[in-house]
Length: 212
Image (cartoon, rainbow, N blue to C red; front, top):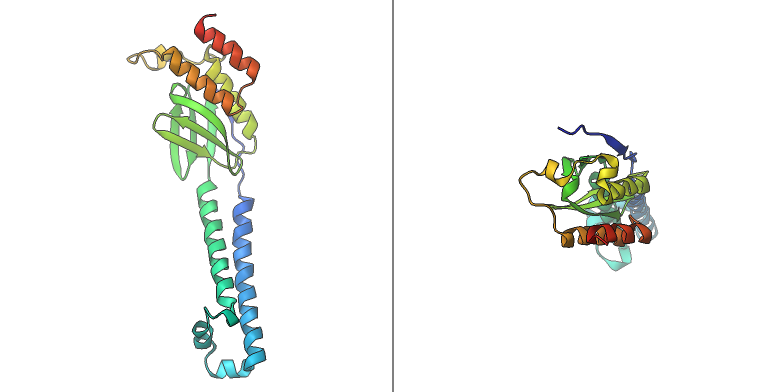
């Protein structure tokens, strides 16, 4: 059995700054809404009146009245916090390791192992991510500090596997037929379109596949 060799590991961000921004924004909007509420009733009725008449009841009674627009500020704050939490959960605890046999990693809290011969394209994605299209779907690994290094290494392995000692298709999939030239060209075009390989590399590999 071919020995598995690690070529690169993703250096992962511990926190997503975008997620943190939305969460902080939501908290700030909530505080502003309370200050607006206090200001409105200080001017109209006096804060002492609000306390005596139970501030919470007054707060919700005029929650959606345009004159007392603190309610809308709170809604924006909640949306901002929820968006921040969703982004944080989605992008947190990702990991990616590229070997001469497969891509191993973790995304959305699940461990994934993607054989190289099942990968059709690799490209960048949002939040400094690496997006890998393979049989079974697309896997996004977020928060990769060395994003470009991971993509370029993976692209090199896909376009010229023998150079790096990557097992051939027959070794990895002895019961499967070799990929057709059309499939190889499609994979090569996807790599070129994503910017993972240069025009010169694309042309050279295309000639190799076509036997020119």
